[in-house]
Amino acid sequence: MSRQGFPLAPFVAQDAVMRVAIIGATGFVGGYLVEAVIANGYEPSVLVRPGSADKLRCADRCHIVTGQMSVVDLQNVLKDCEAVIYNVGILREFPKQGITFESAQYQGVVNTLEAARRADVRRMLLMSANGIKQPGVAYQETKLRAELALKDSGLAYTIFRPSVIFGDPRGGMEFATQLYRDMVRPPLPAIAFHTGYKPAQGQVLMSPVHVADVAAAFAAALDNEDTIDQTYTIGGPNTLSWTEMLRRIASACGKTKLIMPMPISIMQLAAKLFDRLPFFPVTRDQLTMLAEGNTASPDDLQHLIGRQASEFTADNLGYLGYQGEQQGK
Image (cartoon, rainbow, N blue to C red; front, side, top):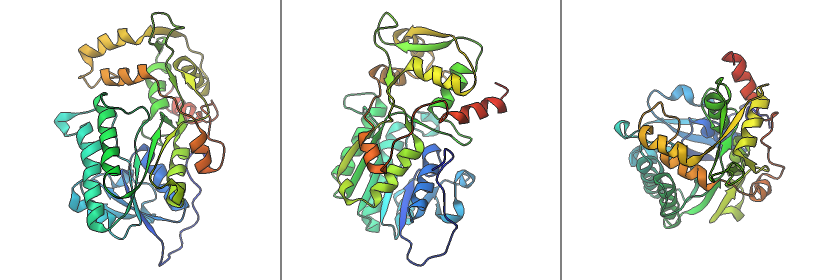
């Protein structure tokens, strides 16, 4: 498996290829899911919004349905499928554009479950998130409600709760790329958040997990009956502080970076004033989740994919260096 994605065998037309629906196939993780499913011998059936066809990877290997997240369109995607993967999620709401946690992370799952019932699809794999809870922020609560809806549906389910996901976004955006853009690339010092009053107190910790490993876990679960009705919390092999992650990102780009500590509480005050403005990099809810940390063991992931998970190292972050060259650093 390369950092760019999955090695795909030459296409050979077959009459009996099993089909798996992927809802959320055109985004960062979605592209890797498409490749992983194909590499495991399935044909992806994907829902593509009008005007988004150019974002779909391996389009010539997919069954494509153009439409919205309505039950009818979803039913068309799920027709003749063995299972469905739901991979729709957002990090920030834009209510005026109809982009909300409620619609994307909960109602979309409810609609997909109804479509699965109508299409007689009996298995669903759900992309959830680590640290979800109720009560919590809207992101956490809608993810948890989606899990509960799936568990109550009667479908065979497998739920994945990854820590923060990194990997080559291939023209899009992901965690490490955003940190490079917002903190490492600018000439100003980078900011390392902590929850206490002193930098040594309340370090923000995460277990970054590579996107190709996450996609491989989904694909492996399709062929593994032991994963039915199971929930997996998956992380990468490194549990790192925010400071160490910034250092590794800078190293991948051939930079040295001055890093200044900052209590999250100070950033939360700024977010209270500005987080509704598109230019502000984080929301109050994101800072709340950041303060809670995002760590997970790699054991379940490595058991599923049958190998060592990729580490958050300068080598595996090499795509950031390429982006720096393209942007003139």
